[in-house]
Length: 153
Image (cartoon, helix red, strand yellow):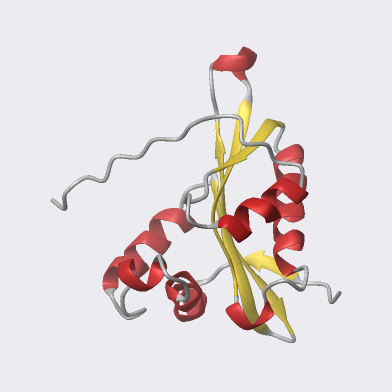
């Protein structure tokens, strides 16, 4: 397995990130052109928030993977912090080669360094391969998740 160089994303990485987000049956219906200003605005907001880490994984200088890690302060569990993993993607031609595992291990290590008591994530019900992946990494399906899509403003 080749080691993935994981680093903070830059605005120049947006085309590769958006391409990975769009490269599956769910993303294909909800993502748009990487030139859409909404992506640059979202990136600026994430990049400016010290609780957010949008990262990319590179091999030979080329972006091959991405994910977002959010550190959430909380009152429950005696003021415990949680880490939330979102938007984990590995380029489709490289899936199954261990890159995703490296991203998740990075997220867990970062969460521990940040003093988090747990790492959590959600995964769409249709992503059965992802569910097996997270199960193999020690995550458990301990809760029922709910989402409410809001209309655009």
